[in-house]
Length: 323
Image 1 (tube, rainbow, N blue to C red):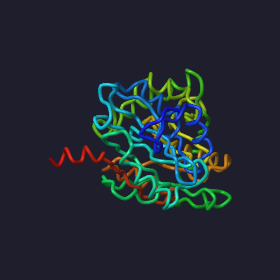
Image 2 (image 1 turned 60 degrees about the vertical axis):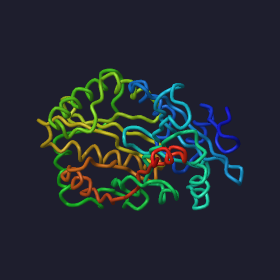
Image 3 (image 1 turned 180 degrees about the vertical axis):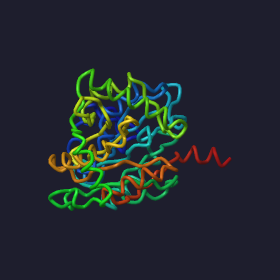
């Protein structure tokens, strides 16, 4: 490791980054090095790094960051995001959820992080942001606590969702992992059709190159629902960790929407997430104004979970801004 800012912070090696994410009970797939590096292959001007903070008990906290700018932006001129694309980020501990004492130590150490500004996406596993940071806004995701579901998860769904599932099953739809170049191409096709329907409401526009690259990364899984004839009716990309099975984004063929493939896809993946021992199935935050999407998630009995996005500025940067 290369030391940063005395004894407080250091830069994690690739191996240590992977070890902490694999061990942490609150790590999400978005904390993975493979995820962070995959995104930056297609985003100019950023590079990936994870900082380590050593606590008083000699344990470490890991903070994955996407850094803006290179050597020409040293120290307080450099900005970081933990992490890009409005997913989940922030600090994680290899052995536990961060305690109040851990958060206090993390908050004090932020003034010594060699960044002018850190924007943190936060995580539904987090408590309140550390003292001294600027809370940007609250974000809401929907998730299911899998251990709390009945043996047949659909028994917890609303009646409208149960009817939709019966219709999908009568139509002969089947869910399966999308693999190989052809399977990912099928998803790319209906994803770009979906973007055309959403127009300006679409939060992101990922190219076929990005999606094929993500499909090769650890912890990223493509799933889909096909008709009896093999036509892809709906699909989704999941970012998976030991604890969290997280829906990242999805798509549906509009001409097949009446068969309710999205209901079947979520139902099958809820069962799959519980089979793997995950604690939560996460529907991911919804873009503002998409009230129908929120209502759809709640038909599965998903609970709202609020978390905070926050910003920290280096003390010198704050003084410069005030002056």
